[in-house]
Length: 227
Image (cartoon, rainbow, N blue to C red; front, top):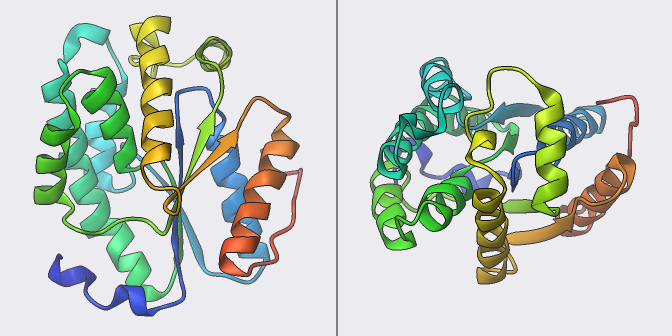
């Protein structure tokens, strides 16, 4: 375990990750969760991957913009973990040490799903890189938003903008990503909670808050004004 991270888990703060395929609603749900934690009186940090630190945000631009064939899966994986290492050392570990709760839009399971399974690198290779960059650290809870890839891609394409490199890989690729996340969710039913995202935004938020309230003895309430 990284020396900077020792003893952090003795505190009551937690790291919550919301992950899933592109277009599953991670952005709005992480914002709502972060806002609810702050309103409940907790010091909380909202972050994302790839990104979450100045250096990692520079790498994000390389990864999410441009043509799909710009990077192969191996290059993507190495860039992702370079960004993740910066995210951990510059943002996540210092925030946890301060006592902040962390709410992250994506974390390491995206690499397992996108590059390891859908990208055909295999989970063994991903785990080797993961151990070098991350070690034994893991979030306290990963909520995986599940939705049919056809609906998710429609949502993602409606967003527009330049950050659409992965969306350009097409429906078949994202079907593999969805199945990869379902596989990951089954691997550890304590760490992972599967949440159906094929409902209204408020319903999904309510389900997420119910999970967290039960797991961590919280009293989070829905604020529909947060989008």
